[in-house]
Length: 136
Length: 403
Image (cartoon, rainbow over all chains, first blue to last red; front, side, top):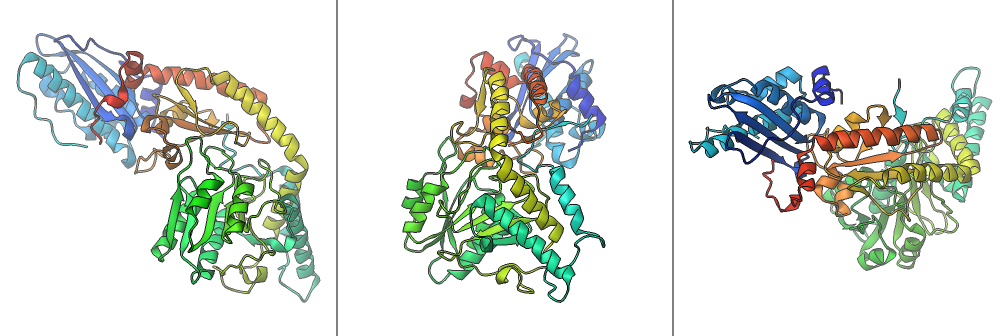
């Protein structure tokens, strides 16, 4: 299958690969997907006291589109507040990366990972989890 | 730069010697006649060319040329042999035996026969990909009419002991069909020695053209078939349709070359395969799929654990390989062959098939090994599963949310 230039760019030069301290109260971790399905994403955010996402990291097991979707998500997350971050939609990822229909699930997974990371952070902070939209 | 071809099990390039012969059977100044034309030399010459090719194919298989039926390829041969046998013997019984690791041309044909009221037993291979004669013997019933097994598996290259299984089916008076699409040039076939009733072949897996194949139909004891293609009664009524002379001479030439060069080809393949495998086998968490001993020498099917196959292929962009995991399909199902071997989902998703051929060079193998090492390291750095493995987390113990 032919990949878009943007997917190839993210795949060859993935942004923000790595791992943040899972135990830190400032870090929210979202792990979504399943090895059986061929995709697992781990996306993490580090949130400042002012509620701004200062850092974001990911690691992804999956196809090129899954890697590109999570790489793009970390780029978009940095500098956003939690409210803005929770509004990132999978359709925006599809559009930005020009994903074909068979790869839309990769963008859905990235959106799920963002929501899961935000929820994890909020749980640690003792507040109610954000309303995750049903997806996948 | 075109990518290096490591997908000889998908198809092979036509040998230039074959292409050269084929060109003589197309144009006005060549032998373009209809081989069924009996009234002029155009037809006679074409017929002579076809009979020469029939003998070339029969010589490689050590059978009678009259046992060779031209078809459009192994898929058609599989359809003809399975449906043709089932329909001919339906009054005797409706039970068919095959295995879970057959090519789709067999499995989908069996599904169709199930819809028609036949019952099919799908044998489980061992973890090495082997189906044993004892398994076949145990599965045969009163109403079994047909056993169909592949000679060489297309994904993992494992060779089935069809000689031994032929003894079992022959004693039980059950028709034995073998899908041998992957065999020519790679695994020895001697039909005087193997009690196989029906066998399917394609030219394009053995440096011949696409669109032409053969069904071997044994004369003694006679294998009976009901035709699936009706028309002018070509090929002794078993497969009608004007014979494509240029394709047929191509297949004949390719099989004649295979007979001459197979020993040298096998030696070369084994050397390349060993060179490749010895370089990568000590990498962490890599697994060879299928038996190394009972295997054709040109195939390596390898799972790189904690990496997904499609992304690995994307990294290996200078190599044409195929992934056992059909990740590009909507179903996202990993290889059914690897699943049948008992491989877990991660390993099945992380498999790559490398197949070598007549034109593969040592330099290409060396470059491939280098590229694979770089790609695997890069993707493992990106893989959360690799992280977990390195941290000692048991991935199979995690309850993953399927999506």
